[in-house]
Amino acid sequence: MVADNFEDAMLYKSADDWDNAPHKRVMLFGMSGLGKTYLSEILRANGNWFHYSVDYRIGTRYMGEHIADNFKREAMKVPFLAELLRSDAIYIGANLRFSDLSALSTYLGKPGDISKGGIEFPEFLRRQRLHRAAEISAMKDTVYFQERAQQIYNYQNFICDTSGSVVEVVDAADDNDPVLSYVSQHVLPVWIEGGAGHNDELVRRFQANPKPIYYPENFLIECWERYLDTHALRPEQVDPDAFIVWGYRQLMEHRLPRYRKIAQNWGVTIQSEDVSNIRTEQEFNALVSRALRA
Image (cartoon, rainbow, N blue to C red; front, side, top):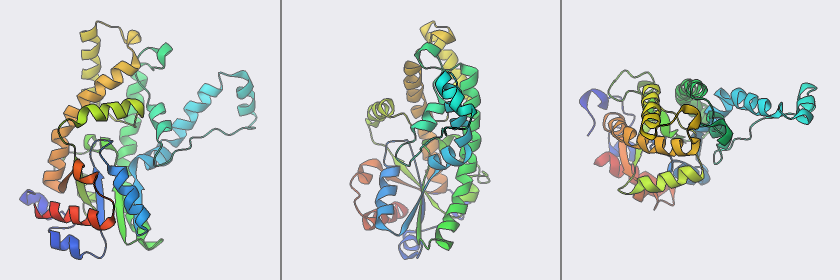
């Protein structure tokens, strides 16, 4: 049920509104690994849906130079490559794709032992702050891309595939939140809720293929200090892989009530097990319609 003071902000106020809408526009949100990109690719393959990836926009438009500069710093450590870089004989850049955001994940890094691939915690914080600013800008760009998709390419429908971190840069309880109040005028927020037992599988996927992730700064500092204290470690002794997985588990618990609040106040909820059964645009539209009737 949507709170009264938020209901007027919803783009589709009923299942009938959605069913009869000539243009269907949605924003999928939830933890990485629950089906946001899976659904987006199904709808894009239909041919009449424009797929806007917030993570891709972050990595290409707002963090691209930071990523490339980080690559160049590493290349400058190799004399052969350093000379070629100085003479502009080679070009180094990130090749991000919707399905491969590893260049952005690598730039954000992991705090801890440098000899194990970690970075110092203050540098990790600095990069997190860059990511926060980029995420807010990329979310607001949803409106620009929705309009562009229709006006230039004549796409009738639009799907925004958000970062799992969107929940950390908005205040779902504030009906004047600068991101949600703006974006929700143009897309319907749809939360993909994970079922019982999903956490272990999401952690396994995160370990195998780390996605770009933003931690709220106060939460991150508290987690870092608690990890150091619990394990009796100095910052330079922390195994970066061990901390990032531990921190990811803490973050999942932190995010769940915040995702739920966005869905309650600004949109609707669908279940991840239902998402896994979706194969067509018609099935997706019917799933959203049922959510609006709930």
